[in-house]
Image 1 (tube, rainbow, N blue to C red):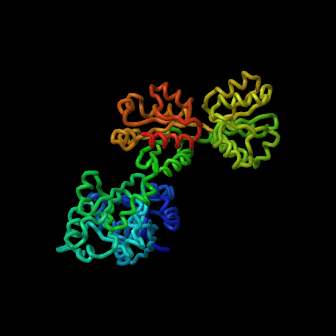
Image 2: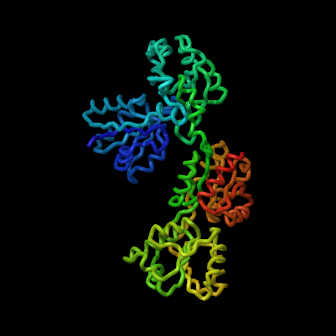
Image 3: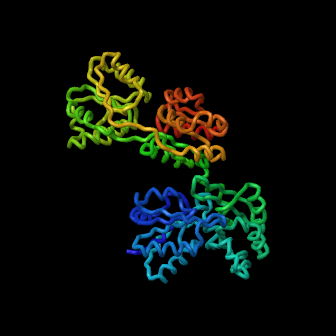
Length: 505
């Protein structure tokens, strides 16, 4: 087994990490990662893995390269398996070879796991194929930031300028004027299409198209900075035609997700598929009860009930946990009718073998009551597995209608412990554009962590989306009106309403 894995993290889109890289990240003892490696990859690590950041950004080096080499050697000699995560590919301007050589000199072993290089991926996401039968049959990868200790350039500028290749410069923004001048002086047509792609493949992705002679001034005007790739060649002319990624409606928009961490994934995935930069700021921690004896007692007497009403997917999850712990499965609910507050809860039931008998058209407690009353629930015995703290509308209204209601807490929610300063600072700096709330408790807990008087001065910088009228009413109690509210009270509808709002301006 190698002592050190030199892993290419790809250009930033987590979906472009290789399966082999993920497998190593899941088992390594130590994870050493770069500035350009997406932090989402840290989620793959072992909970007890040591994590060390050694990023280099615009000349600001957390550790010089020599010290990074020594760090890898030291950790490997401790007998630990080291995952060295590098942006892009380790051997494409990644100094991976230097690290490998140092390891060999110290008698250590290594393995290289190639990554998708940004030179291929970033232009592809911007609609620029780096080769094309009509325009370019070869491509050159060139560093735009040569070693400053060199007496002269290692590049044969006339050869680069006169070749029919697509030219791709890494780290070239700082020297953009010099690169443009050298290519034109070497014989390249000043009108050759040229493009810059910044933060390619990520939610911060941007691109611009110009000509070789005009791109330095245009880049300055549009504020293009590192990390950006420069692409020079006729293939750039396909940018507008083939550009697919930049059509995503939420590209570049920062969206805060306030759901509990274990519930956030579905909303985060949908938003990121639309291009959003998601900020997970869970306001709720969901936890099992310390004492589950009442739950087990209720499970043992399920035959006494006529209906079970589940008000969340979490209710399903934690009820089933106790069911399974008692050696039971869906058959224990034979003979009962089951209601679910909405499609996500109904799906959670279906995943466990139960098809809900009733799902309301509007996914709030009031609609559940209305539908169950129509189904003659009066006089029936009803069990409601739910959170220890929840709205009382459902049990109160069913009781008023004559049902015999038993509320069964199966989990509890707590105020999450989050540092609000990062979110507030991101709103101030224009990195966060939207706040999303999916329940009244997310609203209450959010303002418990970020008081209304702290958000009020920033209100013009951020818009607020609520999943439905109950959540919106809670928001109003804190002094704010929602900007976005979908007609259907579901996570996909909330995400779509957000995208529609961006498109409509």
